[in-house]
Length: 89
Length: 233
Image (cartoon, rainbow over all chains, first blue to last red; front, side):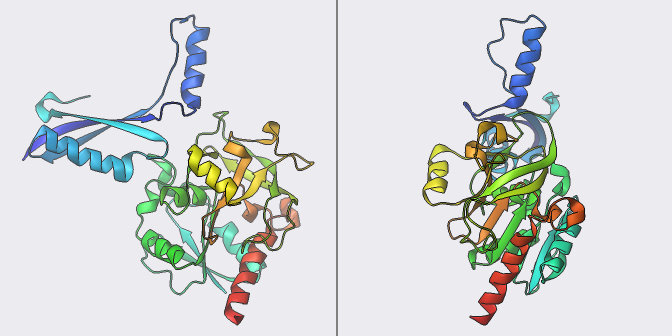
């Protein structure tokens, strides 16, 4: 078993109203950033996980997403793993 | 008529629900979320508040509290359950009601009286109201924007499972009367079997004249009345 740092990105489902993204988009537009076509806001969750391999760490984290970390009705998730000595932020 | 009021760390309407049940003639009892039994309760209320700080998502952590297995079993056995505000969010996260409560469209915490229309008076929770009756009830939430996928929403409407809808003074469920962006102005729904109700507005804060409205009290009286009828039957 090795330690892995797993990054879980939880994002609102495409097409779902994202009022936070809308508010930030509005603020960016008023700052003159006209190039921004859309803004979506999600959350990043970092887990320190003991696992046999990066794939194993990802698999464990995906199970956690299905159970707890993401709401399947409204959110998607994306999981990546790095060895703990190359820690994500 | 023993009614369990589930209390999580961060629940803050448990006492309002306790008083509501008392005024309606029932016997309320607090059940701490670490317990694993409902102790013979005949109905369950999941009250409002910010269970477990609303961390991650409202209700996401509360649904794994030890007592929730007993609540799910109670629902499956046909027991009557009311989730109010945060309690509605908990029941959705637990899969006992469909859909989810998203951040309010305005991004603002909404805390004011709203009007809602009674869509059905033939449930265990609404027998004390008239169909079409317009109630004045407070609401108080940041995440009350009801969402469900199109198929689920269509099923809710086809099966008449929307029990309360935000409306204006004339009873019209207009966009202007929608405080949070909920699909179809949905304020409260029941499960397919009709024994689990979830609603965002607070009937527990409208039970005595001093609170500015008594429109919430019939909900608790309906619940106690349904229990009394079940006992006689």
